Image (tube, rainbow, N blue to C red):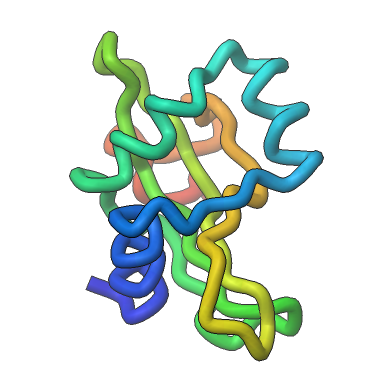
Length: 107
């Protein structure tokens, strides 16, 4: 497990969560419920890890909603801070852009 994902999971377990304005817009646009993002993290898989991102570490996670539909969620932690876990964006992965397992980008 990536260090960023580990830290994000600990923050989410402690309910130390924030959703960015962009995150709210994307959740609404794709009909994704916040509780699916929060609860789905427990079984999430790392798609891409950005531990050295200039705005703070972040990790793209494959999660699933209550109906088993996939969601990609970009979680982050603000640079220089220990919390909160931030939902930067979330979306339904486009099968034309992602591998069959949704864990890699198509070339």
